[in-house]
Image (cartoon, rainbow, N blue to C red; front, side, top):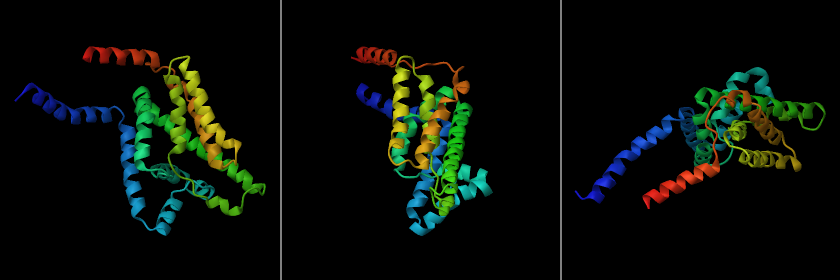
Length: 232
């Protein structure tokens, strides 16, 4: 076997090991993605009326938060509210994977839970206020509210502390603008929830301040450049 063929064989055999090593470093993220894949496939094969019933049973609306909060807070995070699973696979690898690797699975999960639960209660609290003051109909107590976006917003925000200054300030500004701009138009309770989740992610600083490994984009670019030069 020639040298080129042997190299290709080694690359093919090493690829699965590299992929498994990548997954093992962020187990929580990939278990979550696997569950989301299953529920996404199930959702596509359910009749629209049945899917609405299934999602309604898992919705963190005011009715369910009053009667069975723990169940719906958990189950609502295993269904996607818009967007394809592939899109979320990319987004999870961009944000959740580095966050879990940096913080460790338990701390990462802590940020996820704080953002998801906290933003849900704040946003539904705003909706409750709107109902009580005649700004929303009584039927809004059963509004569908599910998905992973609050947890994602919290993780996106907490990664601010992973980036070295002064780059972190530009990143932080981008995060706040991204989640605040929707509030300038027609405000919805989910828009409030997303911004709240971002603030809760930033409030998780006590969970992350002792974690090493601040990422410097310039230093990372130099490392990549050296590797490219060596291979060239």
